[in-house]
Image (cartoon, rainbow, N blue to C red; front, side, top):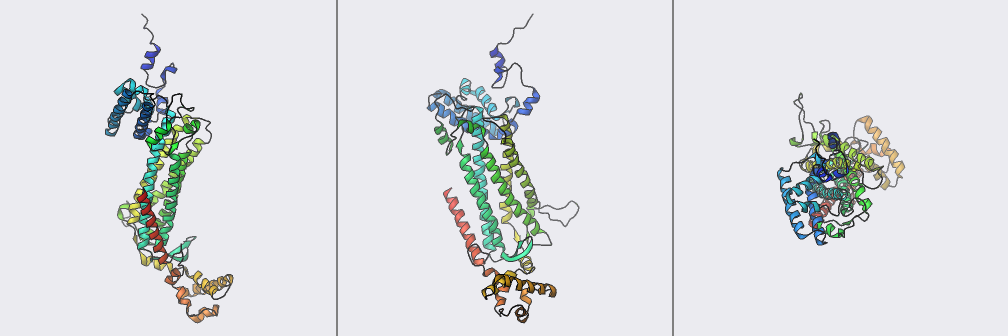
Length: 477
């Protein structure tokens, strides 16, 4: 006896995919695993629910959805949210992604009303909206952490506005600076990073929803209403572009790569400064580890690992650029590969900044070691040249005179400030007793008393100005 064939409607009902009626055989288990994204995109579940609630409210406002269906959807999504937050929702790779998992559970809870939620939208504009909502929140967190890190650096700069250390070029002693001035250089970098993130946020904060699959929808929707509900600054103006481009994610990764590059430069210096051969700073024990064999070791693991994680973030940027470089309009499945690198970039930057805020706040400075290092390498040689220029000697001639003096000091094993006046005058008769005022470390610092200079008074002023900018930013946000 032959078993009657299933009707098309029965076949569809027995399959889990939203598009099953089009196909004559189910997707293989291998393909399911290969194409599923739910294992990583479920982290956008709250954003997906937020976007669905705004979409449903708009549909009801435009009389595309009944008030009864809207209330059912709102109640159902509230329960789905609770199940996700409590860990009760069972995620299935048969349903591919976060969107279909949530929709299936909603339909189980509220029936046909849940099926009507997808009216006027596609997973293409739905996922683009979810990513932007998620990324907007990440940017806000990262900006807040950058502000905190700059605040810590400004406070340390105030404390060490007069702490002398050598400034380097080519890792050779160049001129004396203060530790506070050095830290403020990084504060400037992180301030530009903050500005880049805020600028990136403007382009992230545009609503794709309403673009549907690629061409828009035939339903009389109100996209601006959804944008206002979700806190977007505006809507994506072209439906093809709205669903297909990920340049906002690439821009975020580029800004993140610069943050990590600046973190890596600071990390490199912390590693060098902690070396016993340098001994400029010490990090708190909670940011270091020991050795399994050498009991004396205190290793700067956090800066080293942050330096390494910079390559990881750079890699995600290159991966996203490569992902987008050959995609024709509009949406392609390639774009499923945009999320893991983006998620990991945000996680890495956020975690790194969180640690550095705490770590930089607890840095212990060895001022004596810094000062001793500044006395090496003839750090005040440029000051002697400037002194001679002010006495009327052309700079190139002054440069030559000082170079000869430095050579003499190297032969004698002394510093410029140790040379007797008569010996200095042998290089040029314009040199007088007041030369020793510029040959001291303090004299060198104080001579650079202009905006942006390393004079302690200027460092204090710059740190206070930074703290003032930070306070204004916090008050306005």
